[in-house]
Length: 286
Image (tube, rainbow, N blue to C red):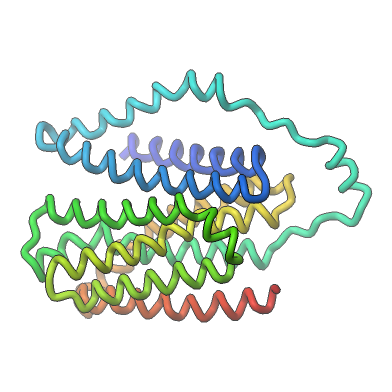
């Protein structure tokens, strides 16, 4: 438990620092592209290391934790290739003489809420899907792992393509596409009668999930004054992990009460409600 606590602190720090540095280094389309690449490679990392961890676990249950030693490899690279960003002091001084930038409280609160809800819904997959696949298809653990990896893979693909979406669509439209895909994917999973249908649902949901993280990060870093950027990014990281923490606590009693299929159906309905809410709120902010 102590080791997991240190790991959680470290991961939160890395995620916050990485996103903040991307926002400091880049702006405009370049920032959108890099945030998409960040989310995409996180997804690809999940596919790779979940697979490698599965093979290592066949040898010994402790072996997968050796993967964390790779962090030591990156220490010299971060020291050499990630300098402290040079901020434009003249621009800061100019802004100080003008009307102060307002902290976008409404957008920040609403984005944090989206992060919390979507992570609760997302974590229904790794925490409940193996049991669901066992029920409907008598799936083996390796089949469950493959299914979860498929979701992560499609999520990575859509994240990498995020810049192309953002070049043509606004934040509102991308949120709408993401939530509709998640609703369709979870709806298919809810009504699935075999393993193949679940895979199709996971692929559709993954395409939506992959758009969410870069869209939320880009939206926040675009409207937040530089002085508050690190604080705001750390906040969304907090709500990401809070959603992951709450998901099994909420889904477990719900699945016992109504069944796993109905639980995924309720998640699909929640995504449709969120689609309507995001359209209404962002329409007011236009």
